[in-house]
Length: 424
Image (cartoon, rainbow, N blue to C red; front, side, top):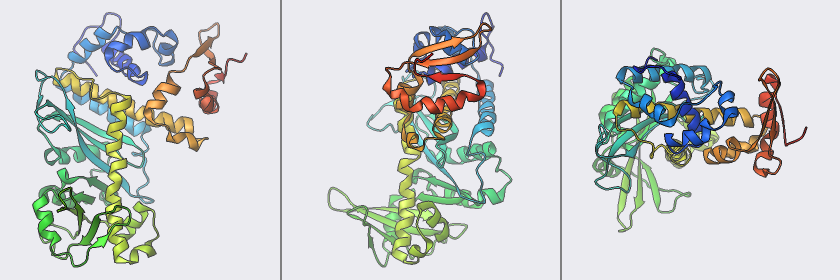
């Protein structure tokens, strides 16, 4: 990357790197870099730095970024993901790759670039931008994330997001891999044009129809409604009307739920998944799905899994990385900041993998606790006469870090760094 900014003490890349380290330290904004990173020499050395840039200089570097720098940054994120991402290394012959796509509103000041009125949950008439995300659900890794103006919704962003994802995963010309890739998306990506585009690209699709009117219309063709044992008041049924408007064969499943006014609310799932695929994705025996009622319910349950995937990832990043509060006025600066946040998210995911490989019970810990209880524990760093780290003595009184001692010791064994609880 070549940001048009002169280097006095730190290069532009080093300044961005310092901002990234601040995110991993739990900084709610770049202003906290001075306290969390700049004052900690041991932390700087752990990340290969001898010093830390001042927070205002990091802000200036972000503001100096241009559109070409954003493209360079996105290319860098692709390379990093290809090196470390488990989603990139996914074995398509053994399992389906599940990609969840969603948008999340990011309110900001009305003077910010591309801050327009749009949909922001619980905030009527608010201005802001939208974040579009593609998540490798099986690994909780962000493959692609882009920023859009506030009025853009998934109907406009879905195809560019999937195209960028295909480029990152190198599945542009790999039809056999796309045939083992499920794109799961809510009704924002359920328009007829988007569904046909995905089908013609060779992807597996599981989405909700964009139009509630169409959902109600086709639900009338359901011959038998099946009660959902997991969700009281919800019923499902297969649509019998031919789906001639789609370029490839699909199954349509109507879902209806009682609203507060006692009327039925309707949704319509569209998919080209086969029963064998659904059995694997939902973890049930294929023989169980020979019962049509169980099969239609399994399709619905597979769609329900979105709630614990991409939607949860947004909530997790809001709580731990504070992504909704960290805004820049210039659009290119916001895009650069977003890519740093994507990298921080993925590093947290990879850190969980590195530090829980021998203790699966620790895998349930979330980003908030990882940043608060593990990454920010106190202790003492011991260096030899050559300035090389040889020992980490963690605070013995910090009981929250005790479960991680062995994992951290195993992780650093190849670097010949001893880890203990204040013992000499």
